[in-house]
Image (tube, rainbow, N blue to C red; front, top):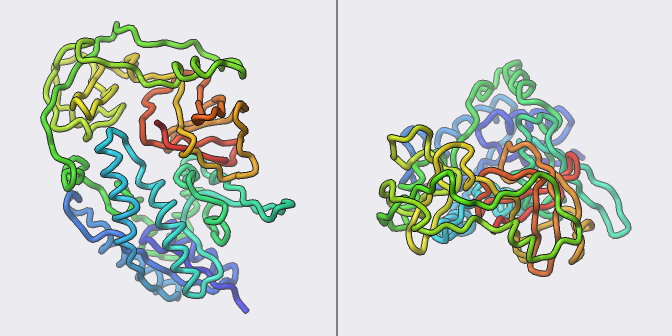
Length: 398
């Protein structure tokens, strides 16, 4: 009897080819389209989140000769992803909705729905891979980067658990994006030349301040320009010793301390919670030789701090901190002991090249100190650590 696979058909080319590959391998394949968002407020014109996507999913299903059903997970999505986003932005942090969507919806609510309908496996179009090995305590899933380094999406899965990987397949993880598009073109699929989705997962491309104003009030405040010669902490290249004191780690991982008196008022903003470290667009301030970038925000005093130029010292930090309760290991067998330190490769955003860093496990949490200072370390985003191509764990940046 054929094993049944439920493929999350999104209306894009990646999930289309995932379904075709599985059918070619002899599985009984069904497509399921997730409806996770209905509200169009704040969504840019022409970027409706799902009505066009479902049309493409239907065309692919007909072409491949597979059944397509829909599941509405919008209540779960609003509660577990969007409400969390609003809470994080209100607190001055910048969440990653795609990572949350994978942890809370795609690999939780959706997988449970698919398995309860009789599927043996669930598949998505993510560019990543899994390898399962047997250990004395049972099977252990290893989450590997996709073969296509330009498209690897393992970072977006940095918060999934061993349990969530139990019945999941990633058929396109061993292919490159050009190969996927070529196969789709050869098959005559409607998604072959369709652009990849952009914007917030399942919401679409949004005017973020307008979207956030559904729950967060706009409040005018000062934009303060910090001069380039401000005495920011600067650290030499290299990794500190493994037995470094926690007090020194705290200093290396702490955000820059910024005060209104450190600079001059450069303009007015509409709410500090609408801005994030490293942001350039949306400041609407001209007259400078180089662009202005956000180097810090204070949502309590409603202040936005900016600096001029890509190399402004306020954009760079040597390390970051993850609270103990927010440390997450995919490879639970490798969890670090308090007092231990290890060298891994780390990234703090999607598509960032992996960076050499040392992790220090302390009672209060993990300190990650980089070999070289990093630009745009952003509270609320996720730092993910790798051993070569294997993603081991992650945590929200404090």
